[in-house]
Amino acid sequence: TRRWYFNKRPTRSIEDDTFELREQTLPPLAEGELLLRSIYLSMDATNRLWLGDWDLYMDPVLPGEPMKGFTLCEVVASRNSAFAVGSLAAGLAPWSDYSISDGSGLMPVPRIPGLALADAFGVLAVAGPTALVGLMEIGRPQPGATVVVTAAAGAVGMLVGQIAKIHGCKTIGIAGGPDKCAALVERFGYDHAIDYKREDVVARLRALAPDGVDVHFENVGGEMLDAGLTVMKNFGSVVICGLISTYNSTAGDRIPGPYMFRNVIMRRLRVEGFVILDYLDRYPQYQAQLAGWMLEGKLRYRLDVTDGLDNAVGALKMLYTGANNGKVLVQIGSE
Ligand code: NDP
Image 1 (tube, rainbow, N blue to C red):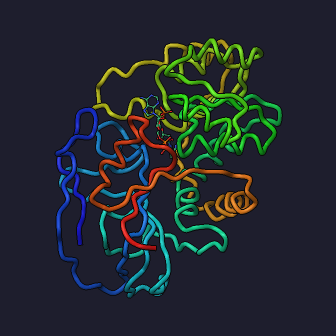
Image 2 (tube, protein in one colour):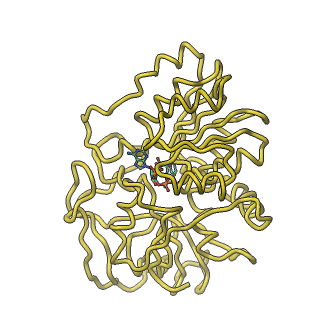
């Protein structure tokens, strides 16, 4: 099988020598193990964090180890009664054509009639549950609340805006460039879009939400978070879902902002972070809710699929430049 290894820790952006693709032979299956064929690999902003030396919410990937990611696989051989040959499973697996697992951390994946496999995996594996938990359980907006979302055209952001609309909120999405901003309003149902590359974000937020913002959903950090903190209403909520603008860094770097953290006290804000891995036991409930909305046409989404395991590194790097248009997946094998 071909397998990507984490070769050398980058200090900033992922570099040519950060990963190395190697060919290797897998051993025979032991009792309790299964052989997995990778179909889709989910590229997630957090993957860069696993390569770094900052404090993390899980064990990092160390140089010399296989790189891993959330993967949809087919079970092609099994010595584990919980996973039948021909069934689908998802979980953390190496960036690899084939891999061996003992089943721990793997979830069986049912095929959902009416939903393409890529759509179901792209929305239901990471981005959808993150959007749902982050908005509804951490942000907890009331109907009529004003919700601001950063990286709003990305995998998580495009869903947060729509879930907020389903719950009767007013939504403002912030993204980079005219195409993404047009998509926010026309495709993903945001009430308003702000192009942070061209516009004064604070001024636009003040104009669009003159009474202030109830819930700020943060995916970016730095100046975006500062802009959000500046315009919050008293007793508003700030959801720290991600801080992608800081991920290409090394422990000890002086990361910019937020400078308006003072508003946590001036405006009596509730600021709360979360990690979706802590919610895995409730995945069936979240996935049923999200799949229902998808089948009813209430949740629109866009995938950005790269073909081939050999192109995985380039696909991951798109997340940190904004080159992606939608949820980034790598198709490793046929469905
Ligand atoms: P996206 O599809 O949103 O892609 C990332 C986007 O972030 C880019 O397209 C770009 O959008 C924006 N971006 C990247 N770098 C910068 C920068 N320096 N300044 C401003 N914008 C930037 O990726 P994901 O949906 O996978 O992730 C979105 C966020 O959600 C990440 O922060 C991630 O860590 C977080 N997340 C958190 C989880 C949790 O459990 N807490 C789980 C999953 C995701 P643009 O072109 O608009 O600039």
